[in-house]
Length: 430
Image 1: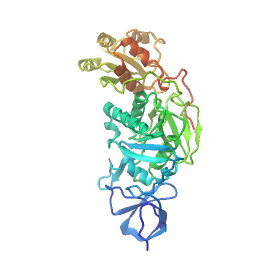
Image 2 (image 1 turned 90 degrees about the vertical axis):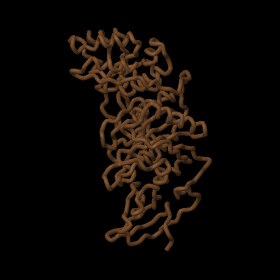
Image 3 (image 1 turned 180 degrees about the vertical axis):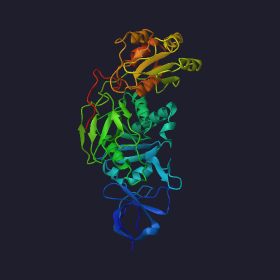
Image 4 (image 1 turned 45 degrees about the vertical axis):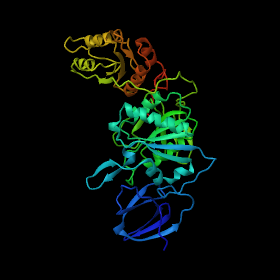
């Protein structure tokens, strides 16, 4: 009997039943007491070696292999796509001793577990970092941007960056501003369930991301499940998307905007209504830099105004307020009003911006008199921009200019689709 190699089509017989699929390579850190096969459904199944009675090879692989043992094909007729891994759940496995999840897989491991990607493009893998998304920070965003630039200058027609989901929308926004003139598709994707789980959403997310990375949609996008099923993914503008559920596969939603497109695993892309992020209008060349002395402050009942003093003592350069509804903050009760603190921040030349914690809808500086009290102190009302996006954008703006008037103009300028002229009121897009 021929010994099976990774990539071979096999049938595995156990005490109770048989399973047919592709033998997957074993990442170096995984448990050697199990084998993994990819079923026709696209899901991976792990089988304990103690339960296996027989393994029969149905079809041997042929052609060149990468060093993980997966068949690799290269064609001049296919686009070249770089997959950059940064960590997160998509790069994680379950430690069955503790029940916890930890990062383990690299971009190469992911590609090895989804060899179908080589049917779409010539794939290059780059393990950039292994960081869970809660530990991401501005320095790592710049590191990602530099890696993407390196890949595109080396000939990549598109880039897929795998990332943890919890803060992926922050990174998406950051890369949108750091790379505003990208003439290639840059796709961020992740997984809600670790890649070694049979129910993982990795397969569809990475497959659809690779498909979308070969498309006409230049700029930065987030591609994830569009429903609870494995039927399609949505491609979202990188500056208009937010994680809206802790565990659902379709956790990411476009806010105040339609998704750009539906991406199907058969390779089809259907535009939903949102235009491509980069319409071909080149913005002035900007610095690949972010000002880290920016704070995001959520407004809540009973908050202590001296919170702002803390940031002023830290020599903060920018503050984004996440106000209530139209952009309200406490203004009328002497003990809780933030107005004196805002005046103090303005005197220190701190740039202040206002967003809403309502998510849907937009802020407005003139509907109520207390809103005028805030805007008259120089707080910039950021239309329907997401607070996370405004936070990242202010970092980017303050790295470009030291002039308050220019910073205000830039905050209200629509660079990558982060602001819309009219807010869409549809609740869902299917």
